Image: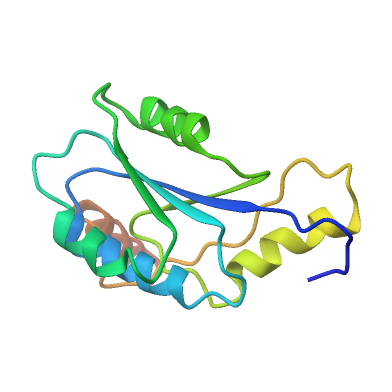
Length: 147
């Protein structure tokens, strides 16, 4: 992190729906970040399954705040994340992502170097064997075409 008189605060924001079985991998990775988030906001887009067990497992390891958004769709859920966030920087990620240990630190660094920066992005890698049936089919078909 770059030296500064003012420490920038960071909210990690996540939208999820019906995937309590995979979000634990993300929460584990967030708990292991080299830069601890000031808050982790998870907005459940009105799932039909409970996240209580997985959220309870991380409440003592992360500054976790959870909400339910009943308006269907990712845009409504992301907008809820934005409304609930209390920090200066919002770091968006998905419930099926597993960020590298320096992910959050790497996102924040440019904001210290240049206060005119408004957004940063980065490289995303797909890990085969994970994902939905459709995603797995896409990657298998892509490999077959390449041969």
